[in-house]
Image (cartoon, rainbow, N blue to C red; front, side, top):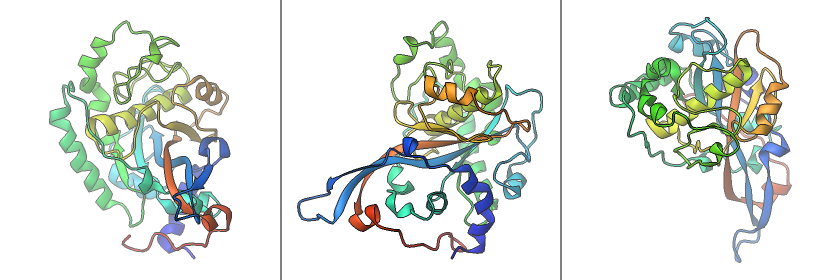
Length: 310
């Protein structure tokens, strides 16, 4: 049923996707319109981005193909520094993760929106963003056919190591308390804190101050999402804290909650620490669409995804 291209990726990718009812929030409403009673309005959260959090180099949760074009060196100093790769999750992987019932979902395409970078104060942005985009494109061309699309890699972004992109922003928010009060002052796209529990968003760099490696991995994942959406503009999905959910899927699998929220912080702290310092998180965003009645309440027909060259 599935091509050899897809089968090669199944063990690595689909094991990192976990679709649970709490994260999914699948809801069915009335007919789409008066003249189309056989189509129903459906809303749910769609898994769209796999955040691969690693030490760098050949470290990966997806398998050997990724290590070759992105192997640029590894920082093994401690667990407070991470690199992040953001991969667009293909519909065929969601279909497999859902037991081949992916036709009930709206699909990744429905979750996409135009990214409008707002990073006007980035000191290094003018020098690096175009280079990062070109390097990402080159990395995608070197990956096997049907491999998930690379949206952003901190290994290709020199500002991830220096934090120079956010020097002005970091200085501007000195003294801001990211607690239950300070973290409530959040404008989508202009967030200053990562929820109520994970401290300041800026500077968006690899280094952190948490003594819990799993928390630090989650912080790195969200910082990378924010940079790629609101600074570089390579992420075609909303990365606002108030919109999406962050779900840990390796080494432990949890439920998706708001990044930096008390619920996610508590859940992650109860999970396992990766001895290899390799973690994965999935970013979910809300979608709404019309689906045929039979897709919603019937059994989906198996599809043939990921054809060679596609």
